[in-house]
Image (tube, rainbow, N blue to C red; front, side, top):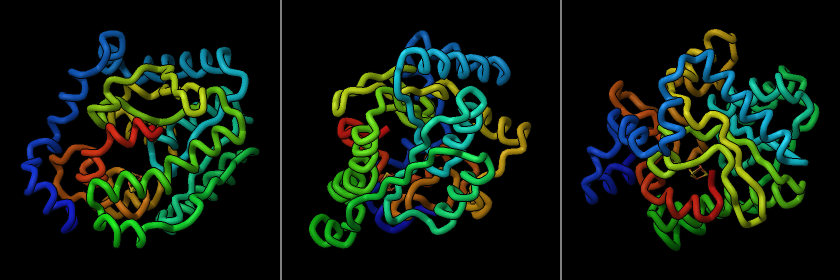
Length: 266
Ligand code: SF4
C-alpha cells in the first residue's frame, strides 16, 4: 500500500519499473565478483561463512558492537552473533518515531536472549514537523534531513561515544543497488571504523528459512503486512506479492539512499 506522497513521486519520476521483484536480480548483477557466487550457496554454508566473517571481525577489531533495529535481518544477525560472542554490545537507535510494537519487541528480545549490554541511543529531538513545514513531508530533501537527524546522527554518536572500531549490521546486498556494491569489511571515516556486513550475500528466502528452522520470534508488525521495517515515516504495508522486498520502505527514501549512505547510513 503506497501512500499518497510516494505514489505522486513515483508517477512524476516514472519509477514504477524500478521497484518490482526483478530488482533482486539487478542487485545481484551489481555485486562484486567475490561476493556474487556466495548468493547461491545453500543456507548451511551461508551460516558458516557468516560466522567466519564474524570471527574475523572479532580478531580484527578491539571493540565491536552490533546494531539491532527490531527488523528480521538484524534479528537473524543478532541470533548468530550471540552464538559467537554472547557479551557483545548491542545498539538500538530510537528514531523517536518508531512503532510502539517495535519498542516492545526490542525489549522482549533483550530479555529473551539475556542480552547484557543493550544501549538505546535516541535522536536529540523530534524534527519531523519542522522539516515537513520547511521541505515538504517526504520530499527527497525531507528524507535526507529527517533520516540524518533521527537515524544516522544518533548511530554515529553511539559509535563515537563507545569507541567502536568495528560495527556489525544486517545489511544485505540484494536489498538495494547501493548496498549491492558493498564488501564484508567496509571502511568509514567519520568516525574512523569499519562497518561489518556478515549477511551481505543472504537473500530474503534465507532469512525466512533461518527464522523458521531456528524458531525465532519476529517483530509482530510483519504479521500485519509490513515486508521491510523502519520507523513510522517510511514503512508501509505491502499487498503486492510481486513487489520487491523493500517496496514498503518508501520510494522517496530509496531514491536518496546514495546521499544517506554518504552521510553514514548503513
Ligand atoms: S525508516 Fe525511513 S524515515 Fe525512518 S529513519 Fe529509516 S530511512 Fe529514515
